Image 1: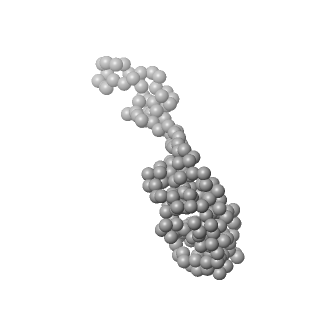
Image 2: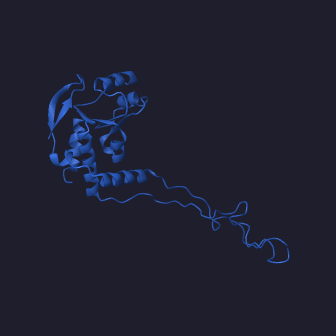
Image 3: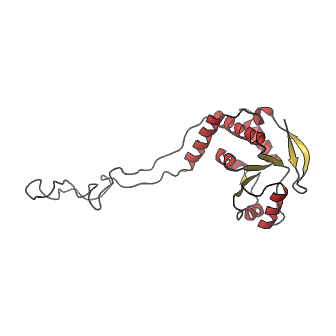
Length: 209
């Protein structure tokens, strides 16, 4: 399979890039993609919320009043859930929300997403992607020349400080390094702009799926 490669300067198709059919022509596997997306979203959750149960609250060791004869409802502790300062009935505790997914299944999900992006003409390959200066206006002009106005993810090989500065004030436009990409990023944007080096990186990484 061959992909058109666009120029970073002229913004026109200048060459073709040969890629593996086994990686970029996978069938659309919705259940597997859904599982991969859910795994990523679950992994983002901190799971650090915590509240005290009646066992964690200090005090309350003594019965506040005798069982009978006072006219009040019986009570065994002042740290029960119905008391001010008492523990929670169903107290929250830290937990791990991460989900397990086999490496091979995740690779197939990645490959299926990239293949579907190509079929829908939502993935464009560019030889490189840089800006002359860290100006938002310059990046907007470059994206417009490539046919993008909004809702685009630019995938680059390494961190580019000027590019990050230029992109941070543009709504629905994001720049990410190829090592940080997960399924949520790929399915969450309308269009993906990816450099040749990034395509080769994913091809090598997913070749064994």
